[in-house]
Image (tube, rainbow, N blue to C red; front, side):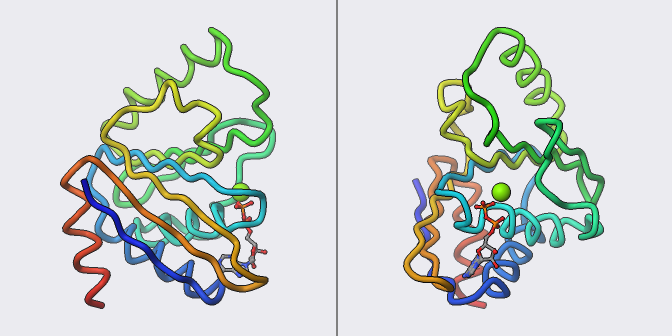
Length: 157
Ligand SMILES: Nc1ncnc2c1ncn2[C@@H]1O[C@H](COP(=O)(O)OP(=O)(O)O)[C@@H](O)[C@H]1O
Ligand SMILES: [Mg+2]
């Protein structure tokens, strides 16, 4: 179990944190982002993708599809479940297909709580709280030991 708490005081700080994470992410990472609209999930995702070597102009929340795919150092699957009202069988089958493909890359899920029952155990959980207009509390936690080293490095930098 590892836990890392980060206080961001600007959009740039959140972006830069994401970049430092993305630079270090191992293949097969699943990242579950939760927090209200406007807390910074997409911004952190953009930073992570930047760190993974995805051209930033490509990275925006999927609007008409549930999943955007990017190619950086690893393939990235960016999922946004904001518009998902409920999980049905079709969705479940589709998403499971993505999980098997994401084993060779990185999967980032906004509004991950909407599919909590389908998420793997060894994910990196990221929970956001809005403290003020420009301040965010971001808590990372995982039961998978492999993320601990990343946050140990980031805490030092
Ligand atoms: N410290 C911060 N970290 C992240 N976003 C911030 C911060 N301060 C202000 N913001 C603003 O909050 C909004 C976050 O938007 P976005 O990342 O799209 O949120 P979400 O995807 O969670 O709905 C942006 O407009 C951003 O400029
Ligand atoms: Mg978003």
